[in-house]
Length: 227
Image (tube, helix red, strand yellow):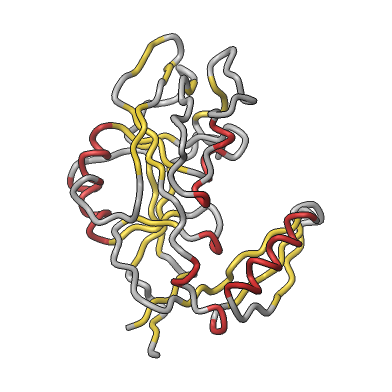
């Protein structure tokens, strides 16, 4: 199988604030994080939730600029989805995506209620897309901050190693992720490459054309697709 280093994809990330932090860092006062449907229970690796998540409400400081994409970290919540406005939603609805769902969210900008923002939930693509035997992985210690190359030859081996690593505050990440088949979606995410969303050039052109704000794209140097 021939592959090419230029995957034809871009990495998408919601823009951080002036000091490099997510713009949204908390929910509004009184939010119940222990609830069965809190943001902590929403996990992209587990598919579309079988409950209605409580997205009431995200808090954006009045000092932060309101943009089309809003980065958020409410104990890891920015890993599981994207907060976007109705302009982005309209673009996404015209493109090719895997299974996904939009949820309307509550948003306070300072003391002002803002409407027409959504949580775009996109579960991970199936691990069957990955050619493990030709990919390169590292074992990352989340406490001691070191990375060690590790050999993984199959999906089953990856799942087993990841389960053991999680118990030791370690993570398994792809340094080079070779795909068995070309991904035809315009927006997707893969578990092995961490908290990353990938988009097509077509999607990026639409974002530019519609003057969408609050996002950054960079070349994807991790994914390798078949020619």
